[in-house]
Image 1: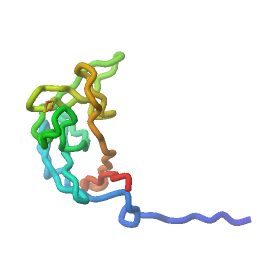
Image 2: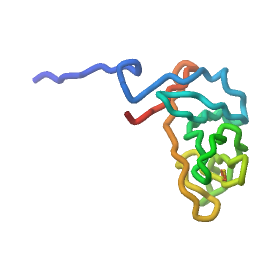
Image 3: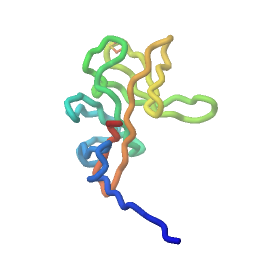
Length: 125
Ligand code: FES
């Protein structure tokens, strides 16, 4: 009996795209990026964790999220990273996209993988 193993690489996986390097992002800040015709916001927390979300604020549609304010909040005894929209200060979880202010719409998020200091984003397509 033989097993078949199909080797895949990030380059051959169409749902992943290299966006930038870790050095392109300053700790505690976000940057906007153009990925497959969509504006995304890439973030580097002060503790060097990397996240990606839509650059469009779900509250207004304004392309502002990369200019948001990074922070964190304790939820259920766990510190979770957050981003606050710079315009109306709606706060979103970076790990789930859930809106923590009122009953706001969730912020679309994208998984980020750090491989040898290159940040790859899952696009889902
Ligand atoms: S524009 Fe983002 S919460 Fe209003």
